[in-house]
Length: 209
Image (cartoon, rainbow, N blue to C red; front, side):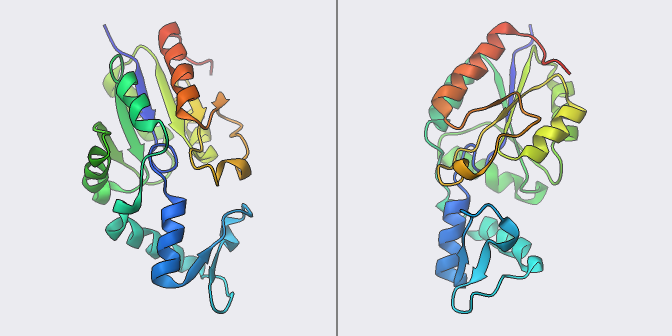
């Protein structure tokens, strides 16, 4: 008999990202990262001039963080325990937009904090790779968890049978991120999210398209 399937994002769902990224930018690059305003296009400024960081510099900074600073990322409260319990009755896959080149590093990073599950590196929308994972596992029911509304929209298009849970596990970020309109629920704490996921698994019904 097929098992339920949980497909979850990593950054801001399993591991903190923006806070350690902000710390590293300040310490190493003298860049102030103010995500409290919700306008990420204007969130990065040079500390001593106040000038915006050029958009073309943002991706190299992110890549640099993931290449050398992943050790700064710590688990979101309750994530390790929730996945350990959910894994007793379900398959778990971590679908993370870190790229295939960093897939092994991410798997090692997660294993060091007690999250030892299959990791798939991705770029772009997650709907198509989510549909591929579902086709591979043939689960009784699927739950998809992510912090970005764009991925819920993509998943609604390409994997409409999956239940979509919007989670922003970073407490500094959650209050300024509105609920994703294409998600079935918004829960930011793993203690509550685990119960919601277990209920979906127990019911065993696909989401309505």
